[in-house]
Length: 114
Image 1 (cartoon, rainbow, N blue to C red):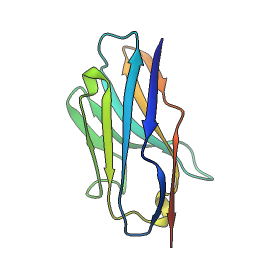
Image 2 (image 1 turned 45 degrees about the horizontal axis):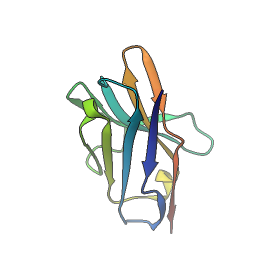
Image 3 (image 1 turned 90 degrees about the horizontal axis):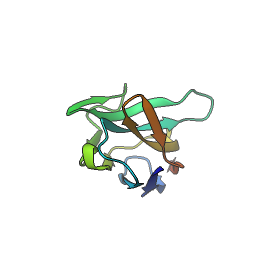
Image 4 (image 1 turned 90 degrees about the vertical axis):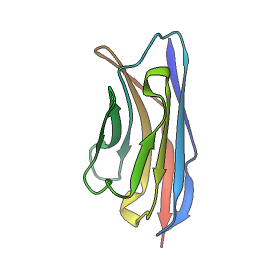
C-alpha cells in the first residue's frame, strides 16, 4: 500500500511564502505523475500544480507564484508558494498517479492572514 505524507503547511501573512513537501512510502515502483490540489472553503477541489510525466501544469492564478519541483517518478514533490493571498487559504493535498489509480495524502492546512 502506498502512502503520501505532506508537511510544511501553516499560518503566513499575505504576501509571504510557504513551502510544502510530499513524500511517498510503501510498495510502489514508479509514479506517472505527482502534484498538488487544494480544497478552498466553498469550492471544489482544484488543481494547484502537477508534474505529469515531465510536463508541468499550474492551476489558474498559480502560475508565476507557485513552483513545483521534486522527483515525481520516485515519489517526492515540493511546492514553493510565493506572494500568498487570502484566497490561497485552504487544505492542500498531495496526489500521485500510478497508472489509472490515484493516491492522496491526508492534506495540510495553509492559512493566509491579512
